[in-house]
Length: 403
Length: 213
Image (cartoon, rainbow over all chains, first blue to last red; front, side, top):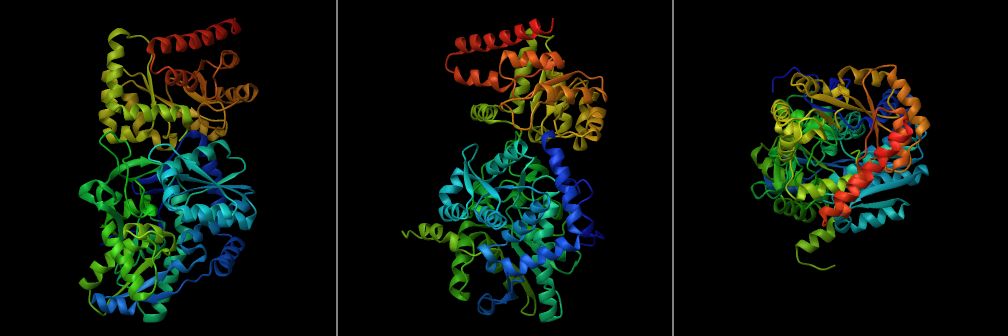
């Protein structure tokens, strides 16, 4: 990478990262996006807004999250030293809350009284319902009927928090369809409703706004590594579904060209089986959910069904900034299978006493390949984006155990 | 994204039967063998067009006999490339306008639009509940200050009285879900389907003609 790109200048005014991003929505949504963008641009530089956000992140979410040195695991793998950015320690158990705290404050400022969200694994749904409860707002979470089956605990958690979980039975009954349904709700109820998108996809300004709320991960990690070691890490690793935890970690390091960056997608049963969700590794450019990005689609441009053991990575698109980072070569995108992710899930649990989310286990699985290829004096920061409590039924099931 | 449950289900049925953009162009070709006069507009989403390639789509649509293309998720800001390619082969790029469209957005859209403009009568998805004729009339008047293009109105027009009321203020009435739901209802009885759809369309046509005298 010898590019003189200044990454902080992207996206452009219209939300483009190179040829990706933009605003591909029906006319009925354009004013809503315009209104949202205006409100967001006002807030992102407003000291009062930022101070309120920082206070909430500290006292409600529990930030900063620590960087944990996985000493035993590093020694076993034999190679680079591995550091975990502990987003699993956030309130609600994943990085998703960083974004919903921010969007919730914005919704309040805009005078909205109703929050809607889409969710796949349920983590963003829980994070949205949590904020809605705290702000006293009505909350409707759209969730694929298939995912409701897979994530019963999170569904119940959302209901406890007072949210309505709306099953989506169209299409493949997963996250892609939930996002479509939430957009339809927003079109019809735009006056009082704020749509919280949970990842760095969707029409501008969502990929930018969600990135800015998640970039707290990378800003902290950068400061923590500099404070502890006096230098930046050699490599960053994060899992990529839509890509919000990854861009949150990556973005503050993009201008540091000496830091290698790896995004890890879900190869499911294996990319050659067709049963996977490795959009960047196996997809091509297209338009979905309001932005141009890499997609998994058939030769007629119809979105294909995806598979991953991890519901949070089971998405046929990916954030447009990742598509751009791939094309210009600033980040590399790889994929690991369900089986590899499960092995990493068990390894971290047994070796470090930390049960990782299945999503994050994909990043960990790649670390088991990367670390031995590096020198012992090199350091890898891997984003432990969520905790695995929500996944124990899935894992037990795969291991043939009935709970 | 803008479609209600009736149109969504229709899309799912079509896809499950193997329909594709190529298949649609083939249907157009077949239709043009017996009808060369009726204007024909394709309405859909961008990804199938992007997947085929803008040039290939423009050429294919032209060759098949398409007169206009409305791409729901392609607002004016992102549309110039495709709109120019279509216009170059004499296919009209058709655009949506909505109750929320500001005067700036209307001006920007009419710059690229050809053929007619499709005004979305309400905030909601296709096949939604009630539209307000007074609101629609006000907005159409505003749009007419920016363009001389004909204005069609759609979304939520499901019966002859509504069609008649809209015909008073618009140049065209667009009916989708009301027809598609009858097609779905009588899918197993094509004879009856033709009758039911025919009844609805002629009742609307009649109501519009009577009221506009």
